[in-house]
Image (cartoon, rainbow, N blue to C red; front, side):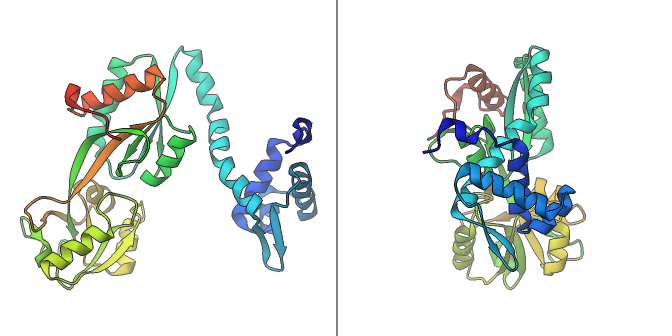
Length: 310
């Protein structure tokens, strides 16, 4: 175990230098970004390794790779730097006698629906200021665990924390306007036989590859799937992948594929495929977190009938 005084020489700049080298995989590339000479940067990294008494990088002819200790440190620093970067926001909020709460949000939320929740918070909790952080559902679970966010808005029900479902959106098919199917009022999997379709990557929403495979088998069709994380580049991904359509919610289609037509998709049982949205929180002892969840839940239309799920 390290003695308490053994980290006295370590400064935040050492850790930031370490992150830059870790992310770029090269001392020379990191030195250029940091406007340092390579020998100077190498010396700073060596000092950090000496302080921690562990090698953080394995040096090779192609650059550097993280050791097991380096990997652990890099993973640990993300939430640390996130908290440090928020210091000005925290101080500014506190100076106005406001309490700052951090809320994670995934892509694919209808903006009007979420603005309704934010408006309700402003009215019901005037002493609370929200700071939003966009992240995938999987990333938010980690951020919730390490305390970087107070409440997560997720497209997957999280394990081991309190959660309540607050919203659902039907999944449909976004199609180019010139598609032979673009004039249909609704589609089924039987209509999609032989198509090449873009869909959410596994872990992004609750409708995963297994479920889609089951629907294809039930309908007796073959579909070539291209699984990707939807982002600002989704239209470029769709074009470069030469897909016939994309399996998404109407909100996602409107945001990322605005020139395409969105059509509801029915499954064999007659029900819509859905993207479900949950609120999740970990700190059950913090009164303002409970109040925030209650306010957002009520604004979502669930009111007193909502019950937290495990």
